[in-house]
Structure formats: C-alpha cells, structure tokens
Length: 167
Image 1 (cartoon, rainbow, N blue to C red):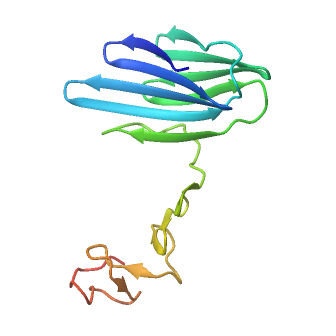
Image 2 (cartoon, rainbow, N blue to C red; image 1 turned 180 degrees about the vertical axis):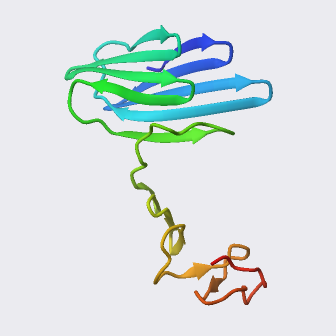
C-alpha cells in the first residue's frame, strides 16, 4: 500500500513497501516544472504503517520492521537513510529532474537491466555489443560521437563523417 503526504504547495512524498524494499519518492511541482526523486532502501517488510514527522528543513520517515526501526531523512530532493537498527542497508537512486543537488549520496553500485549494464568509476555503459566508456580508454574500441563509427585511437577526425574527435 502506498502512503502519501503533502508537505506544502507542490511538495509531496510517497512511500511504498515492495518486499524488503522501501521506496521513497519526493515530487516537487511548480509552474511548468516537475521534479521527481526516488530512492529505494532495504529495510524489510513493514509491520506497521510508516510514520512521518515534519521538521523545519523537511521530514523524517520512521519505518518499523520485525528487525527494528529505520529512519529516513528527506530534505528538499535529498532522501537518505539516517539510521537503521538492523545492520547494513542498501539503496538505489533514480532521479528525473532539471536540477538537483547530489551531495551526501553514496556512489552508485553497478546497474544491470536485461542486456544493459552501467557502472561508475570509470563510467561505462554496455548494451548488447556496444560500449560507452567515459573513463580510461587504453585497449578499448573508440567510436565517433557524431555518427557512431569505430575510430582508431590515433585518429583526429572520423573517416566516415569528418567529425573532429576528442582525445
């Protein structure tokens, strides 16, 4: 069951328990603009509905499970696990926005959906037999950013479209 709270004009919070995951979504709406941020935390299955406490800077969400309580802090678009009384927790983040502050978040762990993989440090995205690598490129195939044609590491221009390649 999804629980909703209205924190003020255009500021809503939704919380859902999906198995052992608690999904928290913050929605900000203003004239012609919508910003949505979601985090998923491993908390366990809820034994009571979540409790929301409004603070001067945002809100604190209390999640109670058979293994204890977890507190999730919400400030603007930032959603963070503040404390957990039952060991380690994991979180994943999904953001759809025009501008958001990402300070204070843990690094993203590798993501895989179907035949698509994405990881950070270095940033690498693979889909099928294609790969985009934003980190070290030694020993990896390069592609023209304009047309996608494979290029040699020594090429300064794409042989297919003539686009100037970045080194």
